[in-house]
Length: 408
Image 1: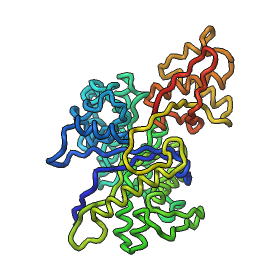
Image 2: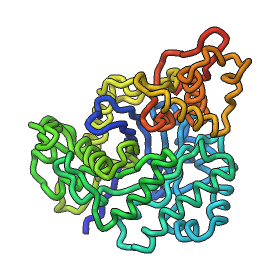
Image 3: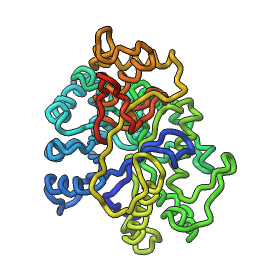
Image 4: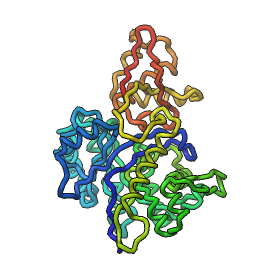
């Protein structure tokens, strides 16, 4: 079997609806791997990342030295509990509580921990016991966060490989493997209830390895190609990455979880393999990562403006979370009740408060939704509210009513 070595760079992409990659919100991040003997000290790595457009970092574990090094940088951190932690977390709530007390509480909020991934690609293992323990482990970890008053600030999820799909071609027919359907449904219900994303590791390289034609390589590396038309949706894809992500979107939609968002936790291209293996190379790894970054930055979105792929100083802009234009009063009331029930200060929209007037559901819900977004970490998925909210660069403050807002 080939031993594949992967570039440490990854792209993290949060998608809001199927077939809308051109309108999705995305951010660039790195996987902070530690399997090497020549890594610079964490402090040096942090300084390097601060000089670029990197906004998020994913750790496979929860190294305290690395987490502490990111303190007061504003860079979002995704930390991980290992597959080996899952049995203990699932069976003993105190195990989960102790894990949070050891790996989160001492560092947050100075270190901006935004997501805890429980295990890695567990649903692709042939270990049914571990699969069944995953959801209880996530639930106990969520309860531990709630007990530490961090439940609305840090999300809990798990990372999946593309092997959770039974079918991915064409993307519009994407569906999950029925043998793990019940287990996935439980995980997705957890994602939906807590507002956490469905995290995936798409690797177009594996699609190329099963079909090693030149045209497939070009399709996988974002290089000029004739494209592939989805026979169901009639969408023309010009790269494998978009096709893989949309296949996941279709599978989620088919299972009834259209409001669960997707985050790409890891992707890349191998830069070394067996001598007789076609595809892995430094040149191809550079092409994949560079072209993927260019692809994301070419999207006409508020968070990924068209720009050179050369690392640039991290852009900053102010953003506020507001309801979409067509949201009903009933949904706004639900959003208002939910937001104020999360422990935020809703006194400004109470009688006598600076934001009480106008006394409308829309006005009060807007204030509460934005405040919860600002307090929860200002991640794109924090401004969701079952897909009834959106981010705006227009400050909704008026008269003496000031809406909190900050740079993202």
